[in-house]
Image (cartoon, rainbow, N blue to C red; front, side, top):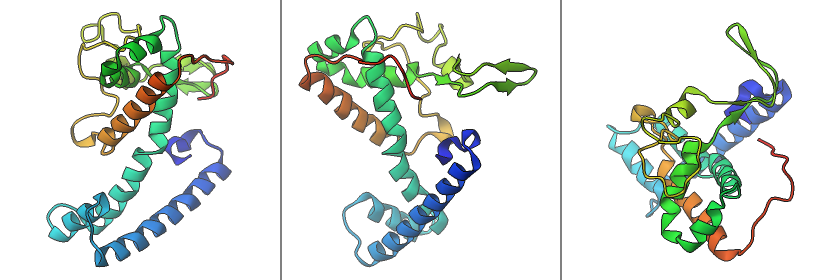
Length: 208
């Protein structure tokens, strides 16, 4: 809930803070235990980097550990759900993915590029008010729809190979969990396409 804290009521934000504190406490204990029993895993590698002294501080180790868990779970849920929704829109891209499973890498990149935001309530932006339930494109999404980079940018095409999208940011702020999120989404959506012959929406209501 804290990922969209500005849109949440105060009691939800407070629950999110409490859960966040518990999550940090959990990782502090886990890190303390792992220091005594280093293994061949991501957390042990992060601890080794922290102990090297010139790459991660103790606070960075803690925040990166929590960040990896969230990046590999919460945000990826939305990517998978929104990606499947796009695949079910005509023309039927899901059937093409089923016939050409090698397109899964490009399909996930297209899911990252195409996603948009929707206002939950009337929202003031400068001297304008954007009505509730209105699709909006933030600067990031607008960049992902630059027609000079992505011809016919509003078309969802899993075979698109027009350029890099900014779904995971870039530069110093590039998402730490990007590779994990891509892998999970490729496995989930690719597996779904191959396992089920027919997938359809039973309700046009979308909960964002």
